[in-house]
Image 1 (cartoon, rainbow, N blue to C red):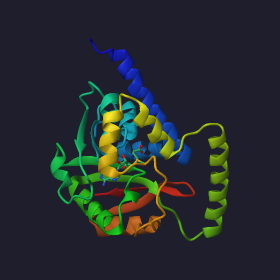
Image 2: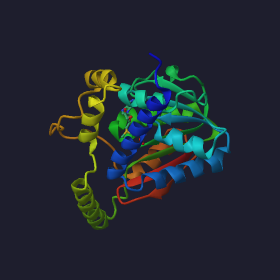
Image 3: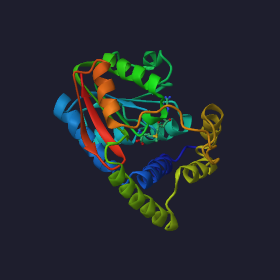
Image 4: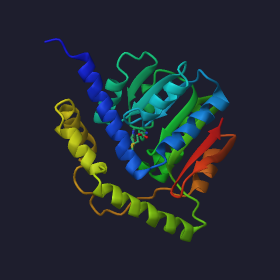
Length: 263
Ligand SMILES: C[S@@+](CC[C@H](N)C(=O)[O-])C[C@H]1O[C@@H](n2cnc3c(N)ncnc32)[C@H](O)[C@@H]1O
């Protein structure tokens, strides 16, 4: 039977959008940080950069970047078979996008990339998964992967820890808004994975994902979080120590920041 291309495209778009809504429940200002991220890429590397989307997930940043900078090309790298399946489906036929499957904690992960050097490396809501030591090593690797004058942008959970009462008040407001949105049907992380695993289009990739990385549908065990940096200052100082020439915050919310580092 001939596959129905338009239905398939519709399904990938459905999963891409559903992922975005789920992420926005955690980060209502997600598009705003992407906008500043892409502005910074353009300002520092022009309108046709070679970009690495690190821990790309379903490819949301690559999607926004290519809409704004259609002459760019993007390498999307991630470890998750299901999220990569959605990303590959979403970009079917787009020769500007290349995929690589890699574990960023593997010291040899850059061997999986199609290029030796990039103008920009972008990432969002991902590197907080790494402990201090592998993250420090990764920052050094990225400094080596960028050409001189190239830029690294990381949007993630990190904050100014010098204002705990302000942070706490904003956190309380955000949590209350999340609660209200849940009542209206917003999906959280576990719900999203439950829905994705039920779709026959994704069920093989879901099994592979659960075997490789665990099952996000289960409530998280109460294991203490390991040694993970949360202060924006830590990121800026570490980037400078790992070979970047300049580093600064270019956007922030109460709980998250976007840092830019220049080679
Ligand atoms: C919350 S998602 C964010 C995805 C995407 N950047 C976005 O903003 O939608 C975190 C991503 O980090 C990826 N990731 C986590 N640890 C990784 C590792 N060690 N190597 C490669 N990717 C990893 C996950 O598979 C997932 O796609």
